[in-house]
Length: 595
Image (spheres, rainbow, N blue to C red):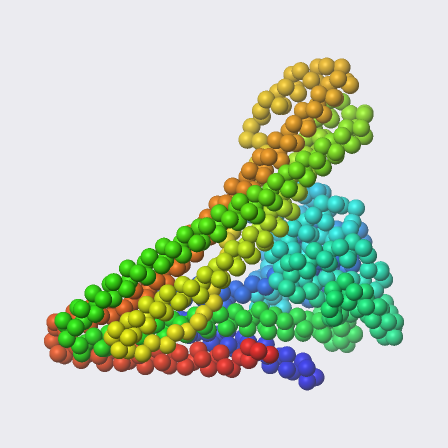
């Protein structure tokens, strides 16, 4: 193993050890008396999942699916010589090979792996007639074990326009993008345009130049240099380009040939990706969890010291200090109400200033495009009867509106999420400031030291959106069926066109309304969630202080033996908290977050 590979393996082992160490510490905290307000299950979930979406994108026929098979070391995803993938396919870690199809409308079905082409290919599922949202393939690949999710998107620029729409739709959910190019095809205009859109969403783009085995070493260097120059112009920065041979890589992994794997150059790329995962994503996660644990332990330590102090103070003094603390608590509650108003105002601003404006743009553009498309299809369908024309135009409207709304919703989802998250990140430190001021007030009131620790928080929401064009047959169908279809061909066809133009406007307005309703509800849920999170953090601080003092007051009314026993227990709790804090800090220092 060379020096770079050894360093990389050491870093991965260090990262895994740190994560397991924090998971173990979380479990110890759950079992420890005196740890209040710990979102321990949530923190454990973050550590275990740590999902990282690597979206594989690029022009059709660059070999995306072949490369994914090579990375995971299994010939799972279907490959063909024609544009193939038409559905988002997500590969995630699982103990065994399982394939789950997620349909629009929240229905899920498990299928046999050999049936996968029937749902993800253009041949098996043309224009997504099966209404598939995405397919998730679970596989026990070591590469997926640390939370990496590989997302295979349809290639852009093929004859299937809807495939390009699907590829664009997943970009807002990417943590990094693997942008695949090929030595046997020049960089196209479509790829340049797609790259511009990718950079709006992805924090990191890896450029992989496939079919490197087609060229000699000298030719490959020349190809990489040319591509680097072109990308430098587009990006105004130095791109990292990784030449690989997906064919050799898969061959090497399937046959166990180290030589084929070496010649494929794949390990260089996967190593760089692993480094990025640990340094840019994984270490941030560890830092966030460690910070939250230290903050909780600091507060727990303070509460144990407060109860100890209460056991030795006169009852009259404690009662007076509790009264003073109650006055401070009332002021804190008023500050929390002020923050609720701020968050509510920001939510309304996002709806009126962003969502509604964007929806107006969607509606205007989509209606114009539909009317032009209807007119064009009407002229091209001279051989169809009025009934056939109605069916064809209605299908066109539904497909186009659904595709446009899907793409809009994905982009708007990312836009609103970023805006709301920015507001939450701006306000979260203020919540911590409020809690810290409350604890510092109690610290001064009861003459006990308190050390504040900063920690990060994340927000995430899930949409419950689904499409509904008609709940039941309405007047439009009845009119077309009973009157229009009985008229002479040309007149009936003209009336069908007019009716379909009206239906197109209704469909756009209906789906725009549903999108608005969905996002307003989601933002409102997120606002309430953040409000509840603020309340929990403040309540935990208030209840911890009050409970510690009141426990001391109650115990003072019992025997001296009870007081001494509780003092010994509190000293033991404080020692365990100190030990846990020292171990969390040790893990934080062991993992070099800056590299």
